[in-house]
Every structure is written in structure tokens, then in C-alpha cells.
Image (cartoon, rainbow, N blue to C red; front, side, top):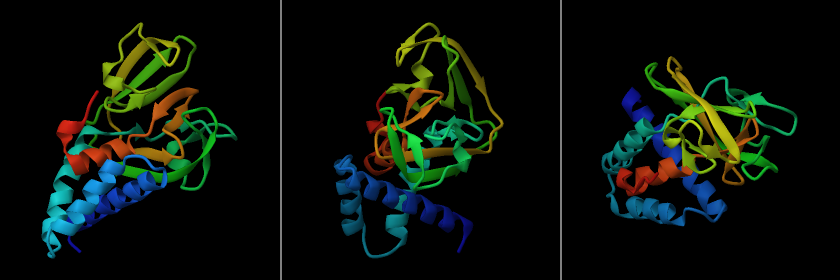
Amino acid sequence: MYPWAMAVHNRIRDLVRCLVGAARRRSDLRALAGFLFLSLFAGCSMLGPLMQLAVPAASAKMMFACIPSGVSIDTPSGPKTIEQLEVGQMVIGYNGKPVQILQKHSYLEATQTEFLKITFADGAAVELCGMHRVAGTRARAIKMGQTIDGRIVTDIQSRSGETHSYDLLTEDPGYRIDGVRVNSMIEEMQTAAVSGLRNIRD
């Protein structure tokens, strides 16, 4: 299989997994309906469906860089780096209770991809891409002195050089990093791939 075809195949696989997870959790059913519509009416040849799904999926991924390697996710047994975690393991969920990882997505990143490290007055810190949400707020929109999730932001730094990023889909809206609520972006990214980037909101 050609490299570009493998990349398309992997993106579609991730899309299907996300939509199955969304249906399981009874959320994002609009995205599921959109995917089924494309599947039924895109035509019989593989090229049409592949291109129709691959182009928006690739565009959506370019906007989301997720969580860089080395960032620790809170788990019931203590922090673990996101690359160590696997599907089926437990993490501390968005709502503060142990939840299971339903999906783990990993991505190759260009070394110029920018990640933000946001530090709070209580010493907690999160590191993620600008499009990722912290307690529902885009990281790129967070300002010094702003209160996020009950914490005051005291420092924001950016860095690049990472080659891999990750995200987790859990049984609730996300997970916790250093006690801070962080949203999973998998469903939002895949919804953007299905319904169009114009539907991404801050």
C-alpha cells in the first residue's frame, strides 16, 4: 500500500473508532449521522470516499496538535506520561473520578508545531496545543491573570521541537493533568472532519 493510502486508511480508522465511541456514550450523534450519510452516498469506488474523508480529516488534524510527549496524566495510582497509557487503563477523569480510556490517538508532529505550557498560582501546570481546551477554554485564548478551573494563570510559555502528540477519549469529557481538567479533543476534531472546519468554535 502506498504511504499516502496508509495515512488515509489510518485517519478513517480513527474516525470510525471515534464515532463508535461517540455512539457508545450517546454523544455527538450528529457526527455519526454525517459519517453514515457519507458512507452510503459517496459512491462505490474507494477513491471517492477516501478523498472526501481524508481531506477534511487532514485539515482538522493540522489545527489540533493535542498533548506532547512527556506530559503526565493523573491516574488512580499516580501520574503517568501520556505515551505510557493504553486503552482500557484507568485515569482520573474530567469530573475527578476514575474512568477508563476508550481510545488513545497518537500523531506525528512537525518539529515547528507549537505547544503551550500554562502554569497556575498553585503550581499546577498543563502543556498542550493552542486548540486544546482546558476546562472548556481554548488554550490559545487563555491570558495571564485569568482564572481557569478555579486557578489563576501566572505564566504562559510556548515551545516547539516535539515529534509526537497524543490524546485520550475517556468515559467522561476528558482527563486531568496535574489536577487541572483537560478536555479530550478527539470527538471535536473528528466532528470537524465530518461536518467541516467552519463548525469549529472557540
